[in-house]
Length: 77
Image (cartoon, rainbow, N blue to C red):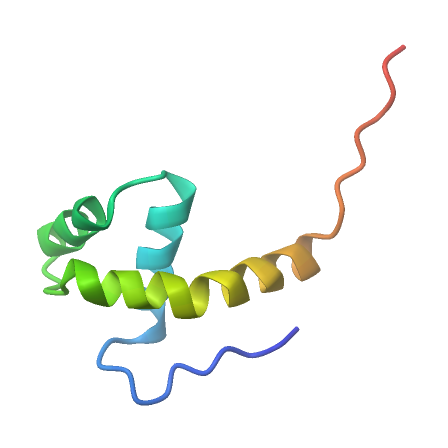
């Protein structure tokens, strides 16, 4: 599994991963994710979240696919 480098980022990797996860998992808008993080005391702009989703979204998805593997659907009986 390829490691994702979060070097030279203002926020810890856990916050970045959580924001990207919220955006893709629940199909929220960038401003909704910004508000949800603000409720938790994390001040981040929606533009920063947009950059994170563009940069880290595909990498996180690839790592999840590699870790989970293919799901086989059993045939109907």
